[in-house]
Image (cartoon, rainbow, N blue to C red; front, side):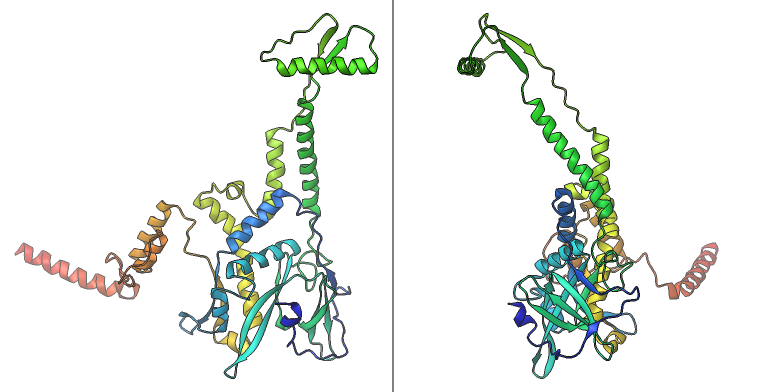
Length: 412
C-alpha cells in the first residue's frame, strides 16, 4: 500500500498554519539522523538483540474494571494486533520495525488508519513511518499538527493527536526524543566507536605485517632488472616446492631473517571498549552471544526492554482511546510471552510456587514446559497449605478449641 493510500482520508483541510511555538524558542523542524554509528557491527548486533526480543511481545487491547479485573476486548485493535497490523507486515515484523526506527532515530511515528464497518468506526491498520523530515505546526485554535516529508518528495500533514509517537531519551527537546535538535545525541558513543575502529584496523594491519616479508635475499653478483626478477622467481619456486624447513640454494644468495613483532591491543583494553558500547544499549556479552542465565536475561529486560515496552503501551493507549475510554479502563498492553527464556529448573520452580497458589491452569503449566494443551486443562489446582487471610483468626480459634477439647478428652 502506497503512502498516498494511507493518508488519503486524513481529513485535514488546507488552512493557515505556522510553526508551533517551542518553549526554548527554536523552530520545530527536525531531520532524521544519519547512519554513521550503525556501520559498527557491535551497534547493529545490540539493536538487533533488542528488536528481536521486542518482536516476541503480544500486544493486546484490554479493559480493567473497577475491581481490577482485566478482560481482552473483542474488536478491530486486537484483530490487527493478533496477526497483521497492516497488509505488509506480521505482528512480529511490525514490532521489530518500530524498535529499529526508535533506536536508530530516537523517534518512531506510527500512523493508525480508520474505516467504517456497519456504521461503526474501527481501525484498519497501523503503519510505521520513516520520514526524512518532520515539522510541527499549529493552527489558529492552537491545535498541533505534524507534517511528514518523505524521500520521494511527498509531504503530508496530520493532527499530532492522530499519530502514535514513540520517543527515546526524551529530554531537552520539547517534542522530540534525543538531543536539542531532535536527533540522537551519540557524541560520546562515536568517540568509543572511533577508538574501537582504530583498534580493529590496527589488528588487521598487524596480521598483514606478520604475514609479509620475513627474510631478505642478498644476491652476491651484479644483475640487471630482468635477471633479478628471474633469480627471485627461482627462489620462490624453491620455496613453493620445499616440503621441509630446509631451503637449498647456491653460493650466489645470502639470507638475512627479519624479526616482525606486531603489537596487538591487550584483551582487557579490547573488553573495555566492547563493554562501553554494550553498556550504551544495556546489552551484556552473554545476551549478545546467547549464553545467558536467568539473571542475565532479567538484567537485560530491566535495562533495555522494560522502558520501551511501557512506552509503547502508553503511547498506543494515548492515541487510540478517547479520555472517556481511558477513564473506563481501556488500554493497550504489550505482554511478554510465557517466560520462555527461563531455564527448566526455574520453570519448575515457577510452576511449583504459582501452582500452589492457584495462579496457573494446567495448560499454562504445560505451555511453560513447551507441551501442547490437553483436554480438561483449564482446571486450576491449589495447595491446601494456604488459607485466606481474612479467615485466619477464625480458623486458628476453631483449631485451638478443637485441640483443647481433644487434650481434655485424652486426659479422661
